[in-house]
Image (cartoon, rainbow, N blue to C red; front, side, top):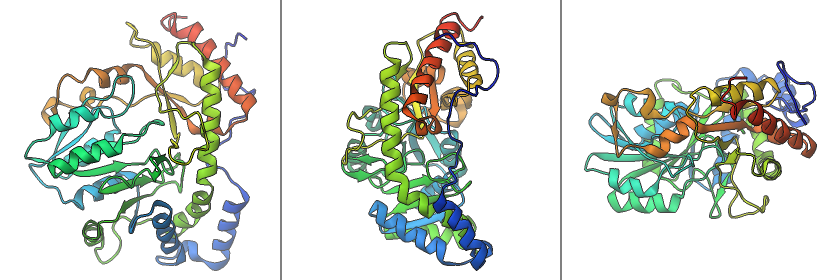
Length: 382
C-alpha cells in the first residue's frame, strides 16, 4: 500500500479523547441536578480521595490542580531547600526540572538506559552526594522504572524517592501500582492523560508527615492548589474503567509492534506478551519508538509531520533537559550519550491510536511504514 497524504485522512477511525460514554454523561447530568458542580466543597473530592487510596493501597491521597503542582508538593513534603540537590534523568518532562529549580534546589542529571527513556539505576549511586535530598524517577512512554533497585540505592543513602506516574496511572510493577514504590508518588489528570479532568493531579503517600507538610503548605485560608468537585466527579467513572482500558491498549500495541516487524521503527518500551497479566502491566499514555540514527536533523520532524497528516497522533519525544537548559542551572553526571540519542531519535504515539480497532491498527502500521520509506529514509527531502 502506497499512501501520499497532505491532509487529515478519513480512512482512520481513531477515537477522540476524552471518550464521552454513558457513565461520564450521567455524572454531568447528576451534577446539573444537584448543583455540586459549582460548590467549593461537596462529596466528589472526598470520594475520589478514598477511591485513589484504595486503588493504590496508600494511606493518603492529596488532590491538586496539576501533575506539575503535584511534583512541587512532593518536593516540599520532603522538605527540600536552597542548596539541596535532586537527581533526575536527563530525558524527562521539562516541568520536573523546573520544579527542582523552583524549590531552590540544583537538578543533577543522569543518563538513561541505552535506547529507553528510563533512568539508569547504575548512575544513581554515582550521582549521590551529601547534598542529595531526592530522586525523581518517571515512568515514561510505556516504560516502567525498576523501582525496587532505585529504592534500594536511595534507602542505603538516605535519599527520598519521588515516583512520577503521571504517564502511567494503573500500571502494575511486581504486583504493585505505579506511584506506590517511592516515598511519594505523583499522578496527573491533564486533558490528554489516561485519567483526565482537563487539569488536575494527586500526590500519593503512606507517610503521614509528608502528607501533613503538603496540607500545611496548601491550606491558606482556602485551598491554594485545588481540584474542583466537577473534576473529581468525572474522574471517578474513569478510574473504574482504567484497568480494562490499559489492558486493551497493551493488546493493540502488541498488534502494532508485530505489524511493524523489521520496518526500522523500533519499539522502545517494556512490552508484555500477556496483556492481561496481573503482576506486570505497563500503561501506554505515549508509546515510544526509536528511529535510526541520522545525519539530518530534520528527518524525524518530517516523518512526524507526514504521519500526522495521515491522521495518526505521532510526535517527537521530549527534548533532552541537558540540551535545552544552561549548564549553569544543573550538574551532569557524565556526558549523557543515551539521553542525547533519545533527544534526537525518539518518537511517541498517543494512546488514542491504541483505542482503535485491530483493523485500524493494521492501517496505522502500514502508514507508518510507508511514511518511513517515503520520507525518513530519503532524509525528509521529498
